[in-house]
Length: 311
Image (cartoon, rainbow, N blue to C red; front, side):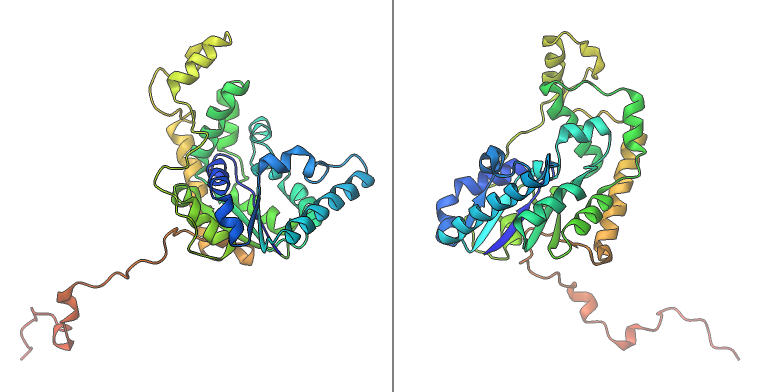
């Protein structure tokens, strides 16, 4: 049985992807595709598996528990098992409080890799950091987190850690697994295409446009009301509408530049550590040249305007 790990990241459509899998569980089961989501992984299955165990005995119990469940899934006819839980690599709250992207992903995934081994493929969906951090803050503010001050925001914008470092840590933790990286901007509306890429099979139940869109970021008006309800100053947020962008234009530009560098690194092969997949619908008709240039021959190579011959 092939184990496919979908590890998020947070705020990149992971909950929508899990909703798609649940909605089509029966159809996927008939094709031999099993699914473990947060409703299962966060109810004791991975206790001591991803988090640092108290002692070696807890780590052994965690591995044994996972292996027993894997054996059961295989006995029930699963040929491919998709495990999707973004908290495996850490929490959005820890990212915000440390001001860095998944600082302990390597340690956590090394333990998960030991418990699930072998893992055939790990899928990570990434997003432009200026939007990713803004979405994380908008998500966590109603859940008790404070509005970051200018110094904290500047530290995040100037951080040396980017998706490239997250992927490198992941590759070191799972050296025998294929690592696929997908951009949120391309795959978020297409959970069916993301699953097809993850399991290496097509003709899956389709997902209509906007059919699966969970945990949308609250707008600024909603966030200001949250601050009022808990006794904070609503002036901590801009008096505006739409999505909250906490960074200054200069900070946001620096974060986008880091993302462009990460994508360039991935497109160049990521030093053999990971593969980038950008097109959710690769089966498209090829672009064709216009009719006029295809009719041009060698006679058109010479310029139409030439200097008069020298005498």
